[in-house]
Image (cartoon, rainbow, N blue to C red; front, side, top):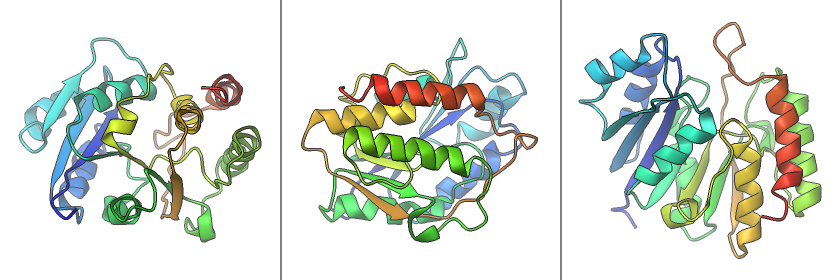
Length: 230
């Protein structure tokens, strides 16, 4: 399947300082055919202007939300507009490296799975990741117990799907609860094979613009229980 198209969905909120660089990195990623979809979630820092002026000519689609919905809402919009064979999530910050797309894409292309997660903890691939690590591992363990899985990083950004699978999921969560919702719903679809591969990770701090917080952690726990049965 060398002629496949990878749809890259980039949810974006107040990323004026990094959106240009991450789009450049996605464009340079070692996947020949890419559809790049940027969803601006009602940014207030000038990101919207940058997207229209500088980014729109470089990518496939720039979509602007009229109301801020959160990461889950932005992803829902992006997935609806995807037309590629596979769909991958790319955060608009610089924590994940698009050069590693083949690591997450190839297991699906090779028939090993239908969905592939890039794990920051598998084989300790993400060196130096400290902030929120304990919370992420707790959420992953809880997910594993309730869904009978053996994952190491449910909260990872890098999730790659066959397009027909992700577009068949009715996403309800608007914020970071999406991560837990999608895993629960994939498992309850039945027959969806999920695989993990190790990836790198370059975390940023809250001062540098990281948006997830304590309330999102609480919501994640609620979502694990809420969506464990679909």
